[in-house]
Image 1 (cartoon, rainbow, N blue to C red):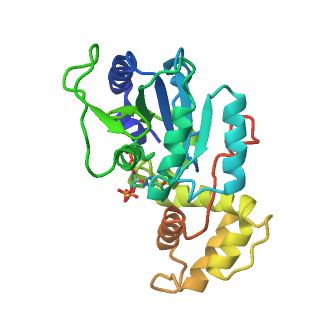
Image 2: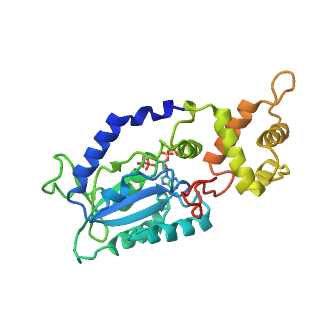
Image 3: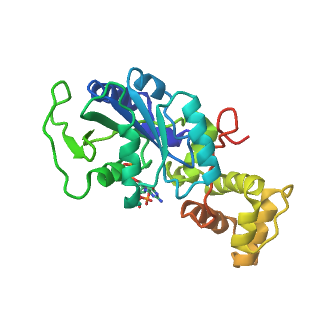
Length: 283
Ligand code: G4P
């Protein structure tokens, strides 16, 4: 389980931390982008520190892939925990842009005309998609502002929002093994770094416990919540005819299928980190 840490060894984290603090100097609003399926695992441990003295907007992005009830619960939780605003969002849906600009605009205690924003989040959360959707196809740059790293450009978004053109890249809570597994399920950590069958086995247990009906529907099987995961693998492999030579069930292909079905939303809208849990993680 050590390999997945490759891209975030301490040197990288220190550099990312320095870069983000540099960018934060002139920022009014920190727009924290979370994947709504993993609002716990995808959260950066330093985020509260980065938001000190600034307005803090949490964007629960990819809400089209998440369980709407959990997204509502996470919204309440983040507001209770001190975020200035929280918005459930789908960056790939252009029709939602106004909802986000209005939310950011509502975080303006000093009544400024122009609000300077930095979009931050872990890789793959949807930061670039959000910047592009806010700014639109015709990117208008609005020149350098003093005090920020040279070469850093500002982009004009509607409602007098100025966005730094490069997002702040944060590292996830990967030092927590459970969180790392959750990030692998959604494809934020390459699953080639894991034993696919182990990752899929954990996912199957989660689905049996939390969304058994979805498994039944997609694969045409019956799932008993007390049933061990491997027996559900057998049932799925049998239904889909995933057999090896000699007629044994092909667990690798079944695992790959489950992981792909999950990533591509075929199992439905699912939130992995539960808002009612103390840490937000599943037990
Ligand atoms: P990043 O800058 O934070 O690293 O993320 P980026 O915008 O590149 O988005 C990562 C992937 O997530 C992209 O898919 C993007 O289309 C998708 N995405 C972003 N926002 C949403 C959303 O609200 N809903 C859905 N369903 N998808 C969203 P991609 O380029 O095809 O990459 P991948 O899906 O193959 O990883």
